[in-house]
Structure formats: structure tokens, C-alpha cells
Image 1 (cartoon, rainbow, N blue to C red):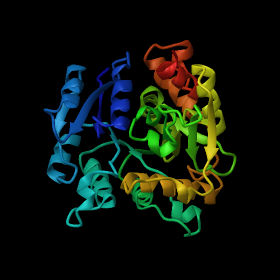
Image 2: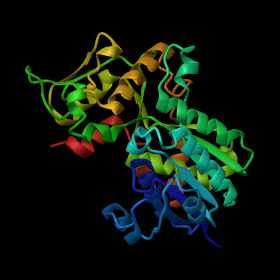
Image 3: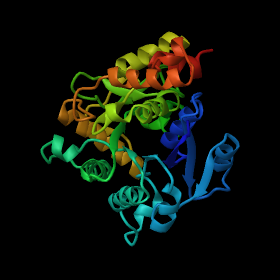
Image 4: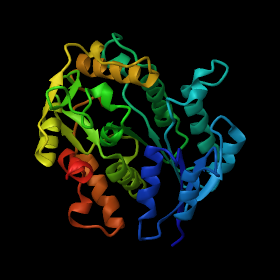
Amino acid sequence: MSSKLITVFGSTGAQGGSVVKSILQNKSGAFKVRGITRNPNSDAAKQLASAGVEVVKGNGFNKDEMLAAFKGSYGVFVNTNSDDPAFDDPKNPTELDLGKLLVDTAADAGVKHFIYSSGASPSALTNGELMIPTFENKNQVGTYALTSGKFDYVTIVDAGWYLENFLVPDLAPVLGGFPLNADNEGYMSLVCPKWGGKEDVPFIGMMDDYGDIVHGMFLDPKAWNGKTIQGVSEAASFDKVASDFEKVTGTKSRYVPLPSWKDLPTFGVKSLETIRHMFGYCQISGGLYFGEPTETHTAATLKRIATEAQGKIGSDAELMTVEKFFGTHFAK
């Protein structure tokens, strides 16, 4: 059996890196992996190469480079970086332009299965009350891919709130210091707006689960064709997040909701402005981050498909939980 080539756009990023990591663990020999990067000489790219990834240079804005990078690929996973400084220059194409270019170029290269990291449309789900440009751009690209008729299979995956965000020192001040810095009363206080609806925040273990979810799609493309998949490991309230942290670490913790989503501090950072508006979108839509009720059954099914191909059993074949994540990274 010849191996099918899977090419990952954004292979040194969090999402792309997770996909690469999962597929490399496939023991069946079903796939080979190619990673696209602007800088093959970066440390991250060299690590991929040493792990067995075919690393190729490619700038997403260069159609000829992308055509060469996608050539020979059975499947492609694409995640575009909304925070790429290149999008700040009005002379450059937008993220919507880039996404469409990648769809068209992958089709021209003969790709059969196209998986795109997208999301719901806040403007549609809030009846025009709130629009988040990065979300809208990705949604339009996803719709373009789904309706293009250029591939045998198209699947959309929408990533939830990265559990790994709790490990980023620069994000802790945005969340009241949680879970890295205690407040003046000695609590690890998670301070942020309410989510909305059932308060079931969709958390995703990016390095533990996301890649397996995408890997599972490539293993059974027909079953997931035309569908949008929720990238979620556990749906949990912020109260539960604080409770799980206290349970695992023994550090007294609590959730302190902000009066309004507009009160989330952003320190003038563009990406944080997007997060603040995300809270607004979720509150107005009734917690429907994915545009529909959050569920973990599909992600769990895809996880099992991938981990079976990796020869994993037991807890290694199960989705990450908030409690387990904190236990891995914070337990004393």
C-alpha cells in the first residue's frame, strides 16, 4: 500500500503542529507528511524535518510556491494565522483573499481532501449586532471551500478555546492572573465575562486532541465530507475550571465574572480585542460559539479513529479534560 501525502499549511503553528504530530504517530504507513513554512531554517522547521516531515518553503501569498508545495498531495490541512502582521498592511491581500487562493491552488494541484480551520459567522448568529472580521473571513473561506465543487472531500474544523492558553504568561493578566498569579486575597481568580447560554465553554487540548481529530477525518474522509466538526475536548463552565484547578493543585481558586463582556482588558492588543468581541458574540448568541450546541461526541469518535491507527488504548484514546490538563501542568 502506497502512502498518501498529507500537506499541512501552517505546520510550525499550534494547529498545524498538532496535526503533524498526530499523523506522524500513525503506525499503518497510510500517510506521509509534508509541512509548509516560510522559513525552513527556523528551529521549529528543523525539528519537523528531524521527525520525518518533508519540509518545503512556501509563502501563502505566492501562488506558484503554493502550487509546488501542494503538488502530489492527497490531502491538505490549512490554518491561516489571523494575527499575521502581513494582514495589517492594506497593500497586502486579506485573510479572505489568502484563504481563497489556497483553496484554488490546492484544487489546481489535484488535492482530493481539503480540511480548513474555520468558524461560525458572528454577524449571522447575532442578526448583524456583532461582527468579528477574523471570524467572518474564516467563515467565508470555509463556505467557499465547501461550495467550490473542486475536491472529492471537504471538511471544516472549528477549534475551541485552547487549554494551552492557560500556560501563556502574557495572557494571565487578561484573566485576572489565573492560573499563574494569585490575587490580593490569595485566590487564583479567573476573571472574565460569562460565556452565555449554558455556560458550556468549549475547551480543546490543542496538542493532545486537535491533531487526532483532524487525523481521524483524513482516515475516513467520506464520513466527514461536507461537515463542520467541533474541535472540543470538554465543555466546561468557568466555575468548573476554577474548581478543577483547586482540586488538582490545592490552591484556593474561584471564578469572578465581569459585569460586561466589554470590560475584558485588552491592553490595546488586536488579538485580545478579538477575544473580547468573541465573548460578546457568545453571550448574544446564547453560548453558540460553533453556531449550534456544543458537543464532544464527534470529537471523541474522531479521536478513537486516530488513536486506533496509532496503536493507543485506554486513557490515551480519550479526550483531554480540564482537570487532567491542570494535573499534567500544575499538580505539585
